[in-house]
Image (cartoon, rainbow, N blue to C red; front, top):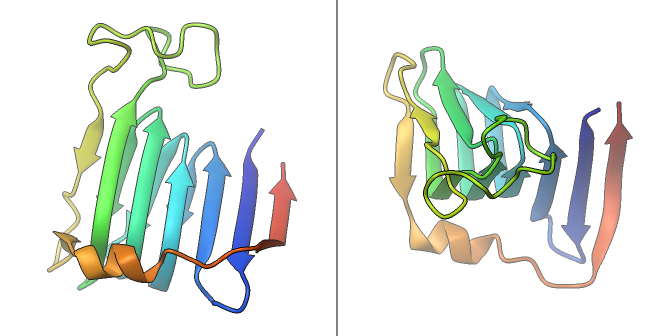
Length: 138
């Protein structure tokens, strides 16, 4: 089952996207906070400004050529436990205080890449309250 929830604050266009499971982004320009519990795959032509959290299975892949830039901050953490399936009873029981080895794979061609940018993180801190703008369950 995959759950995707998008939140947007008023009156800002900034948003929070939560994907319970695997998620793919791009190509295109996006901004906001993205939280993924499975594997996140970014197209090489994706431009993202904001904060990306890949906490669960802890797998990040940048695929394909292009000149996209992931700007802001990216955190990748594998807390899926020995069975490597997030959401089961052994989560947070990995060999290093609950963490296992995360995957950060940027082998896509072209000039794509990740850069830390404090201002992009600050810019996507949306004002509250939040409105649910999309809810998709498979």
